[in-house]
Length: 459
Image (cartoon, rainbow, N blue to C red):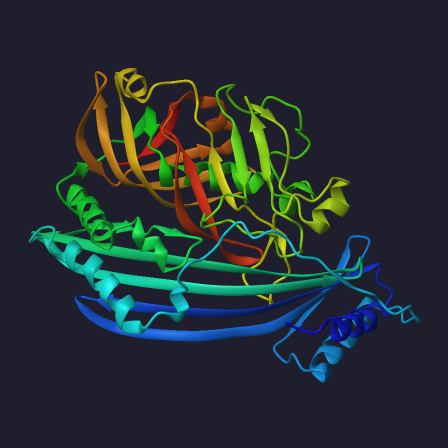
């Protein structure tokens, strides 16, 4: 961590360009991973990222520069470049900082990055071997065990001088099932804002078996028919649809410049009254949680949609200036080389009033999506396209044969209105979200929901 005296000097230098606010963001991140391919350890890596980003504001104009040279000379050089780019050289008073400590709601027992590689390899081996042994048709298994120790510090010209530490552990296993020239895949990748104690409650072998189970289901499935259907989407990673199709449209990055389908709709009914959606960065041990965001603002539980009414957006400092609304603790970035922008943390649809068994029983004909895959979305229009990783036909209120190759197509505003049943088995799942400020860890989640009508792509 850069000393307070040096941070004051760098901030003062950067302010000489005429800015009305300057922040410093520094990080030291250690990543280690063990990778296994077809039963053999393929790679063991351990890398360190260290550097500082300097950002200056003048109203809604920003100038940003970063450097991996954290010596006094390197930081002053970077600060001078920011000041020169801002353009109006002047003399400023020396900045004074006061250290502030925020509560740590994510205690860690065993640092994954400090554990011997053999121990980590044995955990991964248990997961991969269980995946391979699940069925003779499993032809390939790849796995990764990742540990992250991410320490940040933030200082700014409002006098803030603080730091935080984010620790994460994740095991991801991908299986391929093969028969008669057909290959189908399955994936499982749970993680948490924890150290190696994550595996006190999560069995590596169960992770592997779930990846292979999904691959085998798809290997035996026929292709999904296409058409407009009633669709039930299961909990956990099913929440990726809300995350992508609606969540990004609630970030100030797009809302503040009018490039969002949700801009200007605060207080309006944008979803079925059964839908309440929340972004909560304060969940202890969650994959997407942090004590403070990457601008030094404490994270919070932010109700985005309440009973179908749009209540709030996710707002970073620049968005706050553009929109005249308070920051919500959602400023995030992949590393010191990115400017922070408004991003999700743990975003999910809350439990609703409907019993899960009633949701399936209500469907005469439709599709049950047990697992969702990846997809794409346009935040301006909300148009999305998502693959279904594991799906089943529903007939007369019963889940029937599996189908593969399905996709869900629609718009965020449309799907919010068409969610007409919300169950009670909320669960979250882990992923990496890519956007303007890089790739950051986020949780997605929901209970089982029913969408009354949506376009299903298939054959």
